[in-house]
Length: 457
Image 1 (spheres, rainbow, N blue to C red):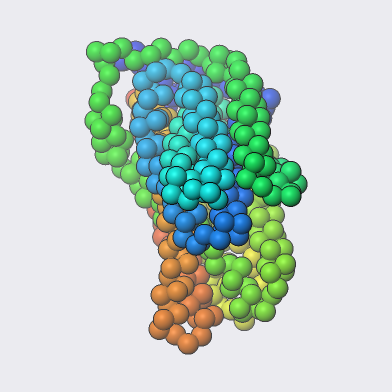
Image 2: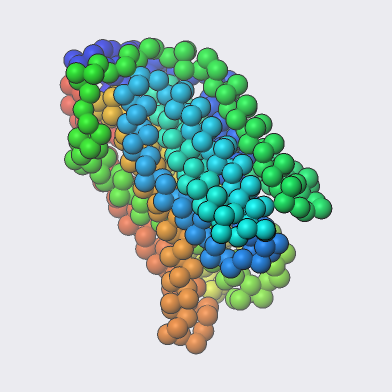
């Protein structure tokens, strides 16, 4: 990574990882965040609204929407290929727009399939399955290229704050769409479901296209790679995975996201069984955790900006603190309320999760440009695939592990405690992996510590 911060032309004619000193301004970062808002607004209908309609209104087994959501996550394995494609083309915007088009069409198609299942179950579920795959492919293509565009256009000192802005705006998409869609879905009918989903998809695509307009033109032009110099996808993928730092970071992302997502489906049942909380109380508890996540993200963004040039601006430090804090909170949950009251522990878990998540995303943005800039999309795709697969597997494995442990213990609390403790151990493993990421070699500059690259400059 050139230290000068100015664009350079590599030996093979590709642009280096350098970012202009100012990079994209805050208005452009917020505009890219709007793309994540649009993406989140479509995804939340898939994972929440359609899930509920299939189980309640259509009386289908919960396994059916679970399988469809798993298809969405399975498609994330294609993220490296989409990143490779944007590397070869020289432009990220077409891949983001194309991904959003696939995502929005898939969202609309899934709603049509769900409505159709009421009269023709086989045909409706077939359409829904195809649409969920389309959603996974679209989210992977758009999300990967969007992060690569951010990583190449945001100055290092702003990466933590930029990651926070983009992810908070995605959460905003969840928060705005779910209640609005719920309002217009009553009284429920298949036709209303199709109309609401179609409207959300159309608005999301329009917002994304308008938000992207002209943003990439503010960055130095990166010419498409000449045909003679193009390397096959699997050659580039093998080169990325052969890099020790990229490989270690891939393992870190998978392990930490597995721990992060494993409590997704078990925290509320645990609170109900252990503390006799009502459904409304456990829902509020989940809201408290999400509030903690937001607080943790904002904390990291604020500190890395204010403490610029000091050790506190190191995203690697915040990754370690976030993972260690998450482990401590999970161990406290495993103690069953004997150490600390439940609500403060859950809020602390959210804060630690948020700090870790946003620091990891900022680190991902910085490390994507390590080495050949024409591999940036492939690198980001590898980490996005690890994240998506781990997130999909984590929720399933967390719930399955609880059921498995309950077969050998008479106390359900012990089953939940065992899973929380296992998650805590995974987070401690993630701390060790994060600390191994410190040495990063910049082209022609020798070895540079990871911390200044991730935000101290």
